[in-house]
Length: 168
Image (cartoon, rainbow, N blue to C red; front, side, top):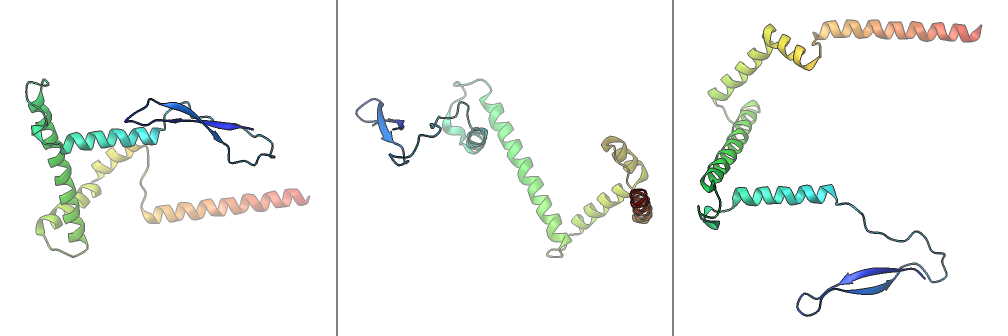
């Protein structure tokens, strides 16, 4: 009969002790692989713990400690304020531009910002820099369609030639 071992502890009275637990298998069934705890830590749980720690540090009050407890306590609070302010600012600007794009609100500044971004993307020098850094080549839609049709035509010719060769 296979059994699992479970640590049970009562925080108030006794230290942890081992308790035998019967497996959920029937008594007559043959034993299968025994249960073993994973040797490493789950990376998702570790990421959640780190995320919670960062959020708790960012949202904690400054009254939690004094300047004498750790060096640079003031720097940490300034960095926290800068980080939260930057993130909230980017989110607010993104929401305003999106709402302006959907004509929910009408802000001339958002129109100007979007127009400047599109103008910058249409600039040949900017496109050349983006193509060079990304390793991609941007094409106009007409050039893309003609190239795609030519490739499709060549593929069909290749398939037809392969069929003719197989028939012979």
